[in-house]
Length: 111
Length: 115
Image 1: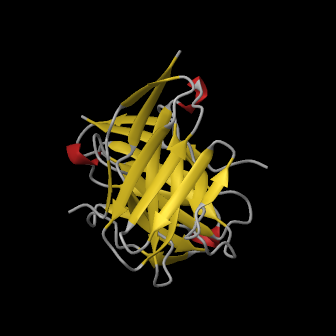
Image 2 (image 1 turned 90 degrees about the horizontal axis):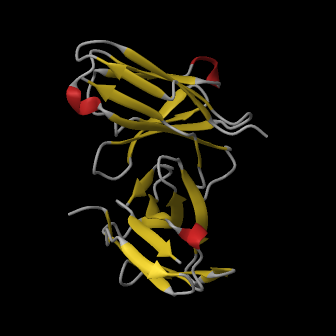
């Protein structure tokens, strides 16, 4: 079983749509959670950290459910520029900083 | 502020040859990481330096891979001899020592193709 699992997509949505990404992780010792965005042939870039209380940044809302080991990302009013691969990323506890990546979910927003 | 830089951007070599990848982290970042994405798979951790010391090298695939960070500044990752399955994109990332929550800044990657 993969340590971080995501729906591979792709998700094809029209501009203005709301789209939700889901992610599950297997290690209950996971400590920190992130959504990264990766454009085609580019490096991953941090989109937002995910906190237990849930957090919002403009059109983006992230939620964490530790009991279910589940993370989500909601994008409202999607724009063409949101087209990218969204990576669910987890960091385990224990003093190490290595990031564990999901395979990513590709999003294509069309006019 | 300059970001993480990597050299070369692309490398095409034949099986059995040696390749050395270089990473220059953001100035002042003591944490330096190497990751790799092979075709169709997720990005995977290779190793982590704190300054010049290897903190965690649990992701290194085998002894054909050698990473160094002399002086605690830039890092090199050497693959010798390269095999076909080493093809992929090698990312370097860095973060400040004080940044414990795990935000890492990635370089543009080196695309390695082993023929």
